[in-house]
Image 1 (tube, one colour):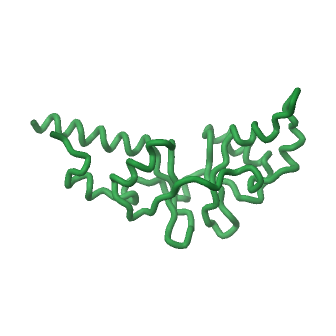
Image 2 (spheres, helix red, strand yellow; image 1 turned 135 degrees about the vertical axis):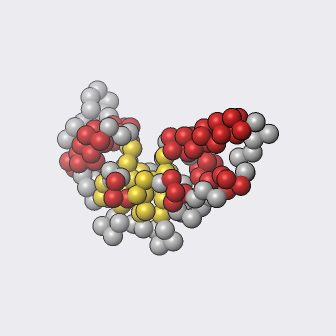
Image 3 (tube, one colour; image 1 turned 90 degrees about the vertical axis):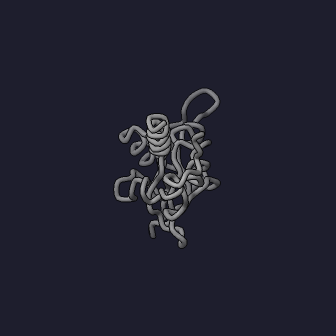
Length: 149
C-alpha cells in the first residue's frame, strides 16, 4: 500500500518545491487598492502576498476582498480604490510555512488554500508553495508506486 509518509516523500522539503520570492507577484501594504487590483488583474491571480517595505510577510490580498470593500448599496464605489490601502483590506490570518518544513506539512497546509506563503524565522518572505506543485509531486509518486508493483 502507498503511504504519504514514504521515505521518498519525507526527504522532500518545501524548499525543493516552492516558487522563490523573486518570481512571485506581490504588493506592499501601503499600496493603494487600485494598484493591488491592477497587479491582480494583470498577473491573472486571484490573490497575492502582501509585504511590508522590509519584505516581511503581512498577509494576502485578493480580488474578492477588494471588490467587497468597494461594493456599495447600488453600485461599486470605484473612488474607494485610490482612497484605501492594501493594509486596510488584506487578510492577516493566513497560514505560513518554512522552507525546511516537510512534504507532509506542506500537503496539509495547501488543503484549504491554493497557495501558502513561505517565510523564514524572522518573517521575511521566501516565496510561495502552490497546491498544484504538491499535487503534481504526489501524483508522480503515486504513478511510480503503481508502476513499480
